Length: 237
Picture 1 (cartoon, one colour):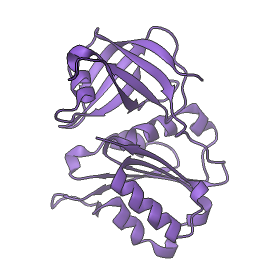
Picture 2 (picture 1 turned 120 degrees about the vertical axis):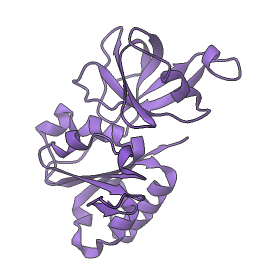
Picture 3 (picture 1 turned 90 degrees about the horizontal axis):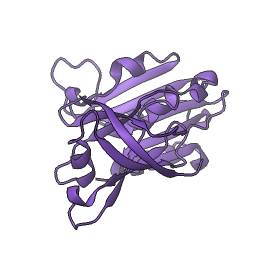
Picture 4 (picture 1 turned 180 degrees about the vertical axis):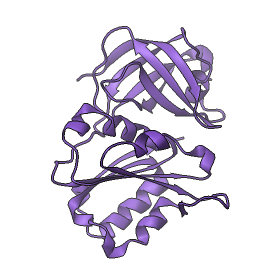
């Protein structure tokens, strides 16, 4: 599927957390993609500094079969991409090029799959595990870990907790007193597992901030995971 330009019409804008919003849109012609791929949004010169168009990449958060298509965007101060998308409302039109990326689901049904994300890095995993490709040939076991700072930053908890055969595991670094789950970073949780986890029988998908991915890769290699079983997508500010 080669990338090409699409005209995208916004259908819905929803604030998911204080700093993250979902933008749903339809394209002027069919857009075929695989779970985990992304769209390169054109930020017009009028909305970007420097007086020229910019391109910003956003993982598609919806399954390939779902319409409208959905993005999960973290608003960043001085961020031209998120700042532009945050101004759009139903009926507005933006341009984008898609699909891009090879960060796609590729685990055989006899192996396990472990998805590890921070923040909006959960977006491509939502697209993967809700896809027909995944549901028709699920892994032997599956886990999805999401690391955030506070409870109000959690994303898609109810939806991902309802995916058959998938164990959803939120991890919070600055949890309130009433939080019953794990307190700390996702990397800290994995360091506590030692030999309890089927490291060698699992494919690992990492998405989010660079430090988390770097630390997780080092940890996985220490546990004897083949580097070919580690797939990553780094999110930059």
